[in-house]
Image (tube, rainbow, N blue to C red; front, side, top):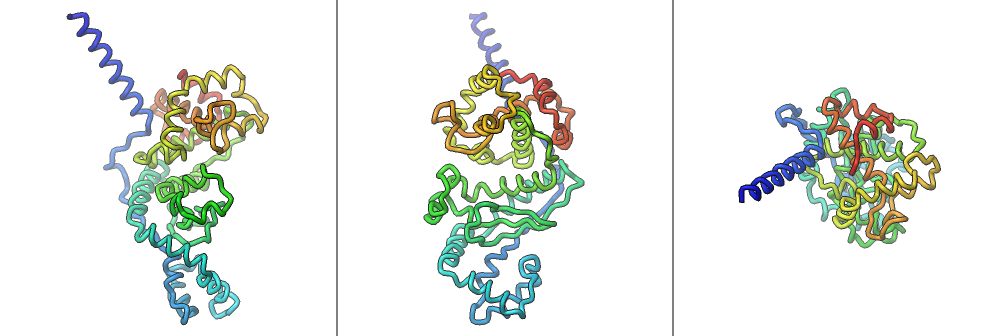
Length: 333
């Protein structure tokens, strides 16, 4: 009986250690008291534009121009400029898209809360970086670039996040795995990724698959740090089942990469199967998610940071030697 109790205690200690280790890998822990109190107020250019009385359209544009100079920097006394905007807001389909946008986003309180927390964390990790003013607009479903940043202005096309059941999305010719992620919960992740590529990304030389795996893993680790409450399914744009498959098959994925000597291949066609988006990863089950190379890169980066807690997030971002990160991670799934 005593031996049995000891075995149970040993198992419980091991389970606790493993559980704590997994939690530590999730992201860098921050004392909330160390965060700046940043309050994000999103300015809704789209709403202001579409609520103008079209019978007095030019006057309405001039009224909102001081608040939205970035969008309305043209001469509003020139009818060529105002007529172009009038045609846009009077378009039947675009107006229907705007109405749906207001239905899905009657207010932006939730988004502002997410971004306030994310920007506070971003400022903590990158104190020298500036933070943009956030605007939203109706883009007529400009899905190629739903979030963009220029100068100190970050703009979100709300009509690209109306939910996977929005009936106009299939007409864009997009696959379902992309449409599934065109929903409100993905906005904050896309905003923070846009900030990453504009302000943090060091644009390292990437020749091998390992280079791209680690680069992708660093982006996900960064998202862990600035969006700690965002589910992994959202950060990865995976379904729950796809993520579960990746976690359960991590050891097999790594064995495949090592056995087939893929880590150091420089052929992009070979690399693309493991880093590009898609319904699944070729060579694996149709139940697998895409971008398995990025998923494994993320696990390597987390192991590296677990073994090197003295490394700041900013220092991690400047480490561009993927081989060193792999070796010093001790990664063995």
